[in-house]
Every structure is written in C-alpha cells, then in structure tokens.
Length: 283
Ligand code: NDP
Image (cartoon, rainbow, N blue to C red; front, side):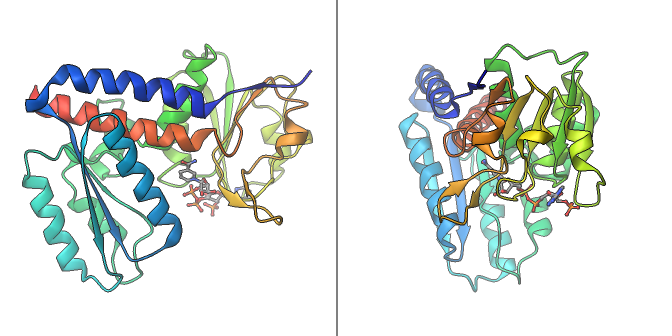
C-alpha cells in the first residue's frame, strides 16, 4: 500500500481563497497590511520575500517590502521596526531570517510588537503558546497542524507524535501544538540516541532537522502520518525534504511531499496570521 499524499499546494490554495473572501468582507477601510523586511542579498531569502509579498497581494492585503543593504546598522533596523510598530495600517511585521552576523536576531524579534509578530517568534507569543493562551503561532508548525486536520486528525488523543528537531522556529512550537491537540509527544535532536527506535513508535512523525533524506523507510511505523518540514538541496541539486520520500511512501499511511507540502502551507499561515492580527487590532 502506498501512502496518501497530503497536497500542501492544493490545501494552501483553498486556504488562500478563503482568506481572500474574508479580506474582501472586511472592506476597503480595514485592509490588512503586512510589512516584510529583508536585510542583505541572500538569494533564498529574496525568493521567500517575493513569494510572501505576492501572496499578500493575491488575497487583497496591503504589503510593504523593505529591502536594506547587508551593512544596515542594527540600530537603524530597530528604528524601522519602531515606525512599523506605530503604523496603524500595518498589522503584521516579518523580518526575514537569517540576518547578517552583526545584527542580533533576538534583539530584532524582541523589538516587534507582539500583536504584529505574524511569525509568532516573539517571547510573548512563544510564552502564550507554552501557556495555552491566545497568541500568534509560528507559521510552519501551524501549517503542519492544518495538514493533519485536512486528513481528519484534529484531536490527537491516544496518538504518539515524534518531532525531529528542537529549533524555536519549528521543532519546539510544533511539539507544543501537537501536545495542545492531545498527542503524546517526544522531541528528538542531534543528541538523541537510537533515533530510529524512537521514530518507529510515532503515529505522527514530523521531520524538521534539515538533513536531506535522513528519515528512511525503516524509521517509520507502518501506516504513520509523516510530515516533512525539511528543505534541502539533494546531491542532484534538486529540492528535497528530510524524508526519503520514495521509500517512506511505501510504509507510511500519509505523507507530505517536498516541494508542494509544508512550504506553501507556511505562506498560507502567514496570511492567516496577518488577517488574524488585523481583526484583533480592529476588535
Ligand atoms: P535548525 O537547524 O535550527 O534546527 C534543526 C534541528 O534538527 C536541531 O534541533 C538539531 O538538533 C536537529 N537535528 C539536526 N540533525 C539531526 C540528526 N541527525 N538527528 C536528529 N536531530 C537532528 O533548523 P530549523 O528548525 O530552522 O529548520 C529545519 C528544516 O526545516 C530546515 O531544512 C529548514 O530549511 C526547514 N524549514 C522549512 C520551512 C518550510 O516552510 N517548509 C520553514 C522553516 C524551516 P540540535 O538542536 O541538537 O542541534
């Protein structure tokens, strides 16, 4: 039996369509606005920023893309953030990571108003997630939860979930969202011994390590749902995930592809968070 493919591209398209309708209902006086800041000329970041701005425009949101040279002083970036924090037409602010080495990502994230932090990285939002309070959730893990929901997995009580990766951006918030949905959660990282033994217990396996093809068929429980967050360049130069897709799809019950899986869902969730932030600011 080969696994069901969870089509993130199609699901993201549906969500964007719904968001477009909701934005239209808000009317011209309440158009949600997103500011995306890019510092430097990292080619991958430039592509991500372009996609985010275009996605915003497609759903009828206002977007500002600020592109700054790599030698922008941290103090100047903080001033730009301060201006955007006070701008009532801007409801979401996103600083594209990674930042040049002379700028502290922590100081920058801390400087974004929590209610405009559509990436969900600010300590106030991270704390709200930990404490089970309302707040903006990180887009990638949120997108993974929507993919699970799309195959009927909303209450995960009685299921075991394993997350490979413990970053603040993906692994940790992913584990907390799975926990909030009642899964029994294990987090693995580079110091986890016998990784395969742990992953084989998972009904839901989320791979977010950034290691091309590291999840092989024998690491997966038959019938498990496998969510592949990884974005890597394979030896052949092609984009690939952390999961050996060809092998794992023969074992898993459902699997997300790369590309066309978690990536498009991340952008859809950025739009959802921006809409959410705009609604909260109007309430
Ligand atoms: P990080 O490098 O910050 O974190 C990677 C995590 O994986 C770390 O916790 C690390 O452990 C763990 N890890 C690395 N190697 C192994 C291993 N061999 N066995 C077990 N654990 C391991 O990456 P991110 O969390 O930012 O991103 C993870 C991946 O997801 C990347 O490929 C990234 O490109 C992708 N990504 C995709 C997005 C999307 O929209 N689809 C969005 C964001 C990220 P330790 O902590 O011990 O070092």
